Image (cartoon, rainbow, N blue to C red):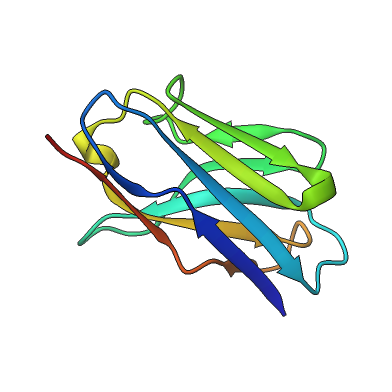
Length: 117
């Protein structure tokens, strides 16, 4: 079993910042990648940002230049610094972990991010 615990969501005004964190524990023998997805009401879950064990990152076009993902391999944590937040960033944000390239994602419970004035 893999457990992912997210923290850091909340309510912020447009233009503000939030930092999400995710700590992984349990049956982690190796980690290929960790990342963040989000799902807004009535929409499909989408990738926000991902980082591999080697440090390779990829971002959704909508967040490039505003969000930064980082990872602490020693502590199995991943963070998402979100700046210049927009109302359209409002969603439930999920932490995800892949142990192998072709394996499934393990998911956290999600943390709500609401951007509103």
